[in-house]
Length: 273
Image (cartoon, rainbow, N blue to C red; front, side):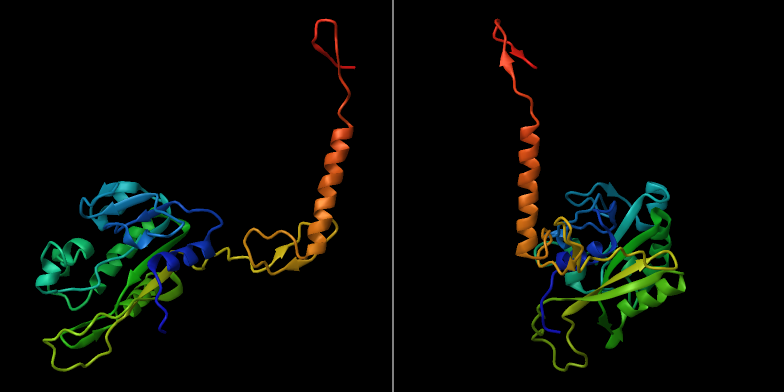
């Protein structure tokens, strides 16, 4: 797949498939809110381990049940750091460093080959603050550590299913690949230009409401369904559109005709018959 996509685009599609309305949403890894830019949906509560600009609540992921209580949210979004044991770029700060943008300097990431040790704790915390038919959207990327491929997205699916979650989507999010480091001398794995948005539910089934591919024509006496090219489409044909317009005009004319005539009395006040 070569198409470049955005986090906002994937979020919009996944949330739209599951809700008729904007859900009560916890962004559990707010950072700077980059994943929401351009998305018509926005988080209700912005949570982060660091006091980043725009953050509503600062705390640890494991404290979510204590901070918010059971069934507080319909949707939890999680975008954890995708790299462990990073070098100077991952630990440093300032322009070009990852620590501030992606949280890669977290001590919980040091000494591990991947981030899978975070999964069990976060899944349990998310389950406790979600409603029974709620949803978790987690963004995870694979990585290579010590020349070994770490399939972190697959591991999250496996961990979620083992904990009783229903995984209904695993959507790749594409970006432009970064250039090779000039210090490298040999390549053993394909450069990663993608991550995955994984959609999971704490119950035994996916409660998605879906997106209507056909809608009912609203013209009088028309019972047809049609594939709407626009979300605002109401009529299946120009004939039905004209029929609906004529019906509105007749209804309006009838309403005007029923308005009683008025006259003014000697004082100039309106006198109804």
